[in-house]
Amino acid sequence: MPFCSQCGQPVGGSDAYCPHCGRPQPGPAAARPAGHDPLSQFSPRTAAILCYVPGLGWIASIVVLASEKFRNDRDVRFHAFQGLYLFVAWLLDGWVLRPMFSMIPRMPLNSLVELALLGMSIFMMVKAAHNETYSLPIFGELAHRSVAEH
Image (cartoon, rainbow, N blue to C red; front, side, top):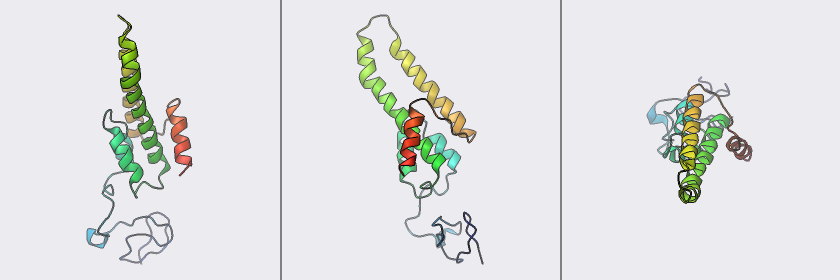
């Protein structure tokens, strides 16, 4: 008799989900329900890294947060929320700070903000690649609160 890959309880050979903890069970594709999770092949590490890709990370974050696979994975959800908040900072930079700083001649403040945001994105991709949950100032606190609300 097979056992759950998460909690170790016995499961039926054709069960797609554990009856005790609800986690999806590995098995042949034919045993999976028709609408199985498209992220089932992604590792938590890959999902976390994708949440910080500048410009596109917000899409990965939303997909990760909506995914059944990562519904109970606090670390990946933390990275997804922190990636979303970092994207909001990019939006604020482009829509608020850039127009404000363009009125000040010879002040490359907008470029410095963009460079800092890019540096944070790259730094977080490296941290996620090493399976580290690093909390950025402000963004990390918001992400921890968002994960706790789940």
